[in-house]
Length: 156
Image (cartoon, rainbow, N blue to C red; front, side):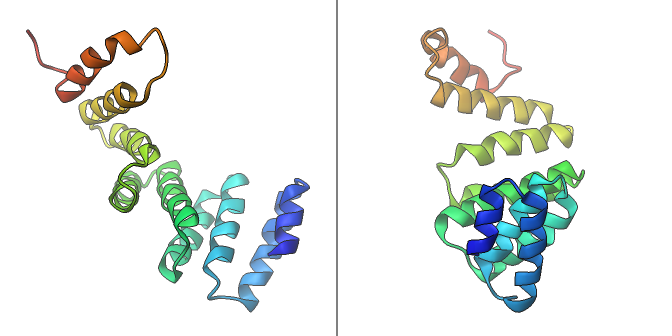
């Protein structure tokens, strides 16, 4: 892992990926190594190849920080490769495990959009915006944004 991290830090991502793949042959049960190699694939635009690595990393058991990143990476990789239902399922699993992690809600909204669930996606984004914005121009409208997030089609 040290050499992989050094190569990554030097910006030698492809070399780090290749080194990581060789390490996986020697250490096939190393969850963190699977996760790191999956991330390297993502960085290089090889999302389809990252998916089984993320899945294996999750199955082998990761620490909390890496697990959170792995669920997001898995869902994002699914979405990037057009596997929208799988993406949404991964984001939902990540959110179930990390209920306060807004990144799953935001990325899940994108997958909802891809699945044609535009209203649900938009309402989710509005809800996250209402809950998290610190923009002084939006803060006075947080209540209204939250209200619209409940039902964007509602009329008064």
